[in-house]
Length: 272
Image 1 (cartoon, helix red, strand yellow):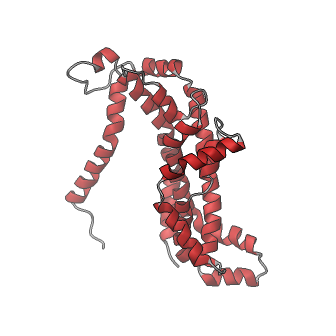
Image 2 (cartoon, rainbow, N blue to C red):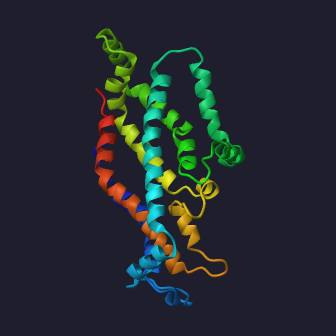
Image 3 (cartoon, rainbow, N blue to C red):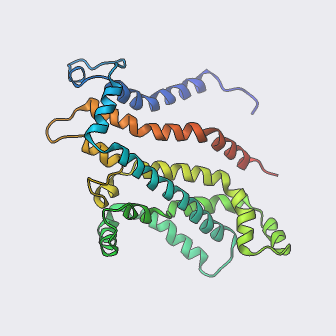
């Protein structure tokens, strides 16, 4: 247990990091050249000096600022909602005893086996009946809570909160809501941080449902990237420059929250 990792471990970790970063690096390399250089028989291997000009072309070709703001609104609202509601439901399934809790939990988990594509048509009909098609509400509302989030938070809170702590809070006169807010929420912070980050990423990179629910005049980032491609000719320098621009907010999010996320994970791993 006290032995330091060897050369093989560090070698595998380095290879994994380089392999994970390679697609982003390759997108940056292509996005920093002109289309004439990209279309040569030998593709460029080092970055060029045209990234800023290609970025300006991205914003001139599509309404990329609006796409960024739409994705930021949708991802932030969905991440906050998923964290709150899934923590609330996960606490109820983990620590409250009520009739039908086990069958309900089984039903929630079973919904994970249903492909998303099967619910697209009835979901679109529902959004049309509510008059939400073409608006951000059509993208936000179906993702306010997720079955995976409920299952994830339930599994974490089962062991993270001792039953004796809840009983002590109840003896001291705390209501059920106050027990949840003062006991469950602090204990759930590490898992909630991970769930919120993954939800933000999932919603930010979602393409299928926004493509159906939103028009071309009100796009998210992924729809805007699709609009950069023309019918028979694809300017890969333009498209990959847009892909890099759409990835920058996620990188900034990881840089700002990475240390707090790791600290929360380590804090949640400490027992006693």
